[in-house]
Structure formats: structure tokens, C-alpha cells
Image (tube, rainbow, N blue to C red):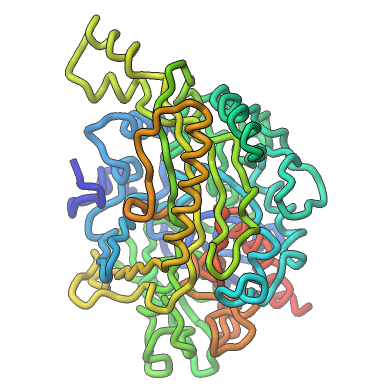
Length: 552
């Protein structure tokens, strides 16, 4: 059994599942090389391959067998395993260091492999609000994005179609839309109906939450069948994951190379990337050359790769003339509260939440961060968790289940973190990975504005729970907050090359043929889950790369 960060043992059965016959050599005459096969890399790769470009996609992790997902689900619910074990996270490959005041549990919620973080994500997909793009001007906090909501709005709609989003236009606080969601929203849960009565009494609005999971058959994938283990594994494939786009990219002719750990990017004297140097399980190094490069390795591994690619011309790291690569690391902070009712709440029948509240989001200013509220459908232990973690069997277990299951209620919430230069990803001084490269070091700094906003969110949550008649048993406030594992800001977007790493098209300021498709380009984080924005930006990156390769 590994600890919460995974042990230093090798990932499960890596040698057994590796196939020596797999060809991991570079492809000739590639137009585009993409580093990372998560949602951004998959979408960019599919779009460019469909446009007729020769595409190579490199990923450090394996290609997981879809038929193993039921086994991974079993691993997820057994107490003998920790969450990193579900997707084979751990060992020297995934080692990292922490520095600073707060420990950041990086390996708790990341996946290296084809599909990336969407293999284990919960699947919530909201658009950022209009003011999130102009936070400096409107709220007095952080820089403005060099693009605004109107620039991304058509790409948001396209991203919802690409991922397959179930939602409804019932949120009066959401930014303007141009068309309905591709699928109808999931019905509110039973516990949502209990919350609704309390919220109505308090004048607090509830609305549906858009989900990247199928409420009906969509694009050849089944509707949700209610396994309830969406996070960290969906056995049915009803929840979107990036293998959808990676598979489509291959159908259009792209080449996907798994277990191809990119060691560095090489460049010429004309400030153009020439090759991605990657290592394969056989111990060989290869150079994938291309005309254009898209780095889509997430908010931690993207800056790490740029820093590892330091050269005489770029001694502080590739694309880092500004000195900002790795800086402004942000995450969303958790605020929550929960308790019990003296009546059934039917918790844990649904593995995701179906209702939320954005009512207080746009009250944000210099002293209060934007935040959203979530009405959980998975408070308290499930019957399976109780049965597997207890010592009782037979009638004593049945009695325990009758007395201890089904009367829990809880709320959550996400709060924006202010971008700060002292919150950052750097290279560790004295720890290396399985290839001898310095591992990422996380220095996570949280600002007072975020902590005070958590207190505000807690006040509302406790007020709702008490109106509901719940016995409030816990509150996750500023002292107990943790990250949502949304890595943002480490290669941020800017008009001025001195202020960031990429331009408004997500092309690096320093290198003419290198783009970054990732939440790492976010100048500010808002308080909305980032994946829909990642997908929208990836579509926009694909358009820009396509236009430049085509000479248009």
C-alpha cells in the first residue's frame, strides 16, 4: 500500500504491460509534434490531423486498456488502495518535491497516460464568467486576460459539442450562451430537493450543473449508468475522457506514441523549436522533428519541460525570456461543510453533483474572491465503503449500515486564488526522476483574500445546512482547505512579452513555432472548473496552428 503521494515503488505491472514490439520511433515529415495526450493534446491532435497535417502525439505514460476499468474501479473502492494506485501513479517517474508553507499533494490527482487527467476527473464543465477575463479592471485583482469572453464564446460552444455536455439554461448567473447544451441536464437528485427547500427559504438560488457525461447516448458512447465512481474511474465511458479525441486523431492519421517521456525541446538559432527529444522504455532516446510544436502537458509538467530545455541561448529555460515560466501557480481552494439529518438523504446514489449556486460569484472585488457553491450527492460513506472498511459481518454489519448510512448531507465550493510570483513550479535541487532529470518542485502560496472568501462561503453553507435542520458535524474552512487539483497559471498569457510566456493565440513569445495548450496559460483562475476553458483554448490553438501551417 502506498501513501497518499504514492510510494517510490515502480508503477503496477509496468514491465508486464510494456510491449517490446511497439514501434516508438519518430515519424518522418511531421507537420506537428504534440507533447501530452490529455484533453488539450487530444483535441489539438484530432483537429490538425483531420485538416490533413502529419501529427505525432507523445505522452510520458502508457496506453491504458479500456477493458481494465472495472478492475480499476474495484481498486478505487477497496480501502487497501490509495487514489494514486488506481491509475498506477507513483515511483521515480512521478516524484516531486514541495517547498514553502503549504504541502501540495500533486500525485493525489494526476494521471500520466493516454487520456491524462480526464481519466479520473469528476467531469464538471462550466464557462468562466465575463468578469474573469477582466479581473484586473473589474475586481482590482490580477491581470486582465489579453482575450475576453467574446473571443472564446464560439469556442466554448464548440468545446461543449466536442466533449458532450449535459446541461440546461437555467442558471441566471452564467455568462450568455448562443445555443442549448448538446444534451439535456441530469435531473436533480433527491438530496437536491431537500436543499432546495432550505435555499428557497433563505432566498438562495439553485440551478443545474453542466456535466461532461452523457445523459443520453452521444457520439457512440452510452448514457451514464450510475456506477457512482466517476472520480477516479468511469467504467462505462459515459463520462468524457480524452481517449475520445486521441482515438479520433489516430483515425485521421495521427501517430500516438505512449511511454515517450519528453526530456527536452531543442531549438535552432532562429528561435524555432526543431525537435522533441524523448526516451522510451527500451532505454533509447529519439528526436521527433516537426514544423510546429504544441506543449500540452498540464500546469506542472509544461513549465518543468521548458525549464529542463535550458540552453546557451535560453539559460533560464526555453520560452522564459520574461522569467515567468513556472510562476503564478494557482489552484482552486475548497470550502465545505456537512452533517447529518434525522431522515434519509439517499447520499452516494450519484457519483457527481447535479446542482450548484453561482449567486455570489460576481460579487467578487479586491477583498472577496469569486466562489461557487456545490450541493453534494456523495456525503458520508457509501455502503460499500462501510462494508469494506469495517470489522463486522452479518447482522452487526447490517445494523451498522441501517444506522450509519443514508442520512448525510454536505456542500462544497471552489474559491479563486490570486496569482502570485512566489507561488510557482521550479526544478528540485536534489531529487531526480527515473531518467535523471530534476523533478518538479511546488511552492504553493495562498493569499489572504482567498482564505477570507472561504470563511464567507462557509457562512452560507452552514446557514443552508442549519435551515435544512442538519446537525453540522464538520466545516472545511481556511485551516482545513485543500486544492481542487486544477493547475493553472505557470505559463500565462499576455500581450506584452515581459509579462507572460505566450501571446493571445497561446504561441510562445520567444519561439515562433511553439504553442502551449493548457490551463497553464490562464492569467487568473476564476472559480470555475477549468477543463471546458482548456478545451476551448485548445480548439483556438488548433485553428491558429492550422492557419500558420497552411500559410493563411
